[in-house]
Length: 305
Image (cartoon, rainbow, N blue to C red; front, side):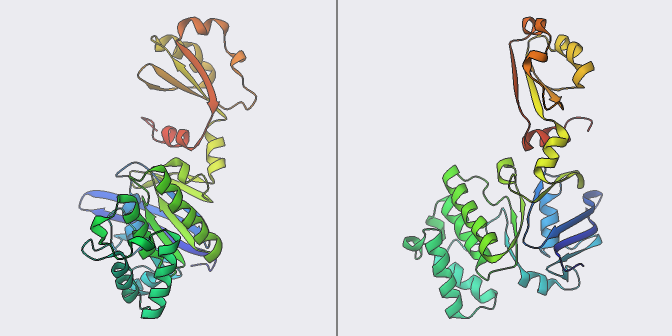
């Protein structure tokens, strides 16, 4: 594995009986980068993260994390990474500080170092007043913050996060992302993230879209967006067939959903004035907006893609 890579996989696969959950996945994640995995439920994201963190043994292929092979050197991999999965790793019967002390012991930290780092993280997440509260009494946002604190207590070089902010409100999401950005800036950590929130991966260095265990799109967010469209033309109509007949020869097949059509516009100089004037008579509304990562997600997952 090249030294410049924090994570690499070659033809990484996982089968559960007849189900091929991950199919010959190739990944290259540079050290200190922010890497996103995107896809619907069941696309293979979580299984991929579980293989990279040594929780699940691959059926075929190879992967290296922090320079260590995940099958032959699992202990070394676990020392190099921090993990935050959808299911909390916290003991709900213990207090916040007890959970952090336990995590420090598992990571081989001395009591002094574990206490010092725990206090720093509690201050950072504004959890000092809750340090002696049982985890079971915390809100979902605070429990998630403790989960992340637990995952980074030993200052891992690589942090693997599976839907880290799912179910949290906007304020808690922003607080967690401020911390993760600080972790990258100050520690030079590599972040690998799976999420359903497109806004969370806009700052990624690279993203991979998965479907059926395979990669269906990969690249820098801006490049992926520009590859799909410059603009999205949205048309609301009670007679979609007429609009499709009028516009498909020019713009290609649209996405159609409940009286709304979305056409991809590649021309960066396009304007609504370029549309036929009579189109307004067969529609309820016409809107033009900039394409974004949500559109990449929708077009890559469209029927027949």
